[in-house]
Length: 187
Image (cartoon, rainbow, N blue to C red; front, side, top):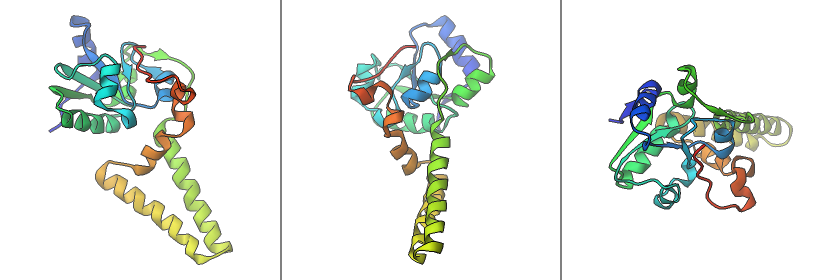
C-alpha cells in the first residue's frame, strides 16, 4: 500500500525538520508556474538514481513526492521504491491540494498542465481520424479507435503512454531544451 501524507501534515513536518526532501515530478513549465518553495524539480520521465543524486537527494532518507494531483506522484513513488529508496511518501492531492490548503507556493507564469495537453492531443487525433475516415478512407477510423484503446489502457493501468510522449515535447522541457543540463532547483 502506498504511503501518503496530507499537505498540511507535510508542512508541519517541514517546520520541525528543514532537511526534508520534496521532489516535484511535474514538467518544468508546470513547476515554474507553481511549486512548493522548497521542492526540487525532477520530472517523472527523468526520474533516475542519477537525477536524484544530481538534485542532492539521498535514498537513505524519506523522500516526499508531489505532482499536480497525485497520480504521477504515485508512479514516482513506485519507481523510487524499485530503486531501493528507504521510504517514499506521496503528497495526497498534489500541488492542487497544497494550494487549496492555503500553504505557501512560489508562482510564475502559468502553463497548460500535462493532463490538459494530453486531452487536446487525443481529442485532435480522434477528430482528425474521424474526418479523414469520412472524407478519404474508412481505414482512418483506426486512428480514433487507437486513441480510445489508449484511453482504456491509461484508465486501467494509471499509466498513459501519450502523457509520457507529450512530456518529452520541447515546450515541456523548460531550460533543458536549451542544453543547460539537469534542472533540479530548490524554488
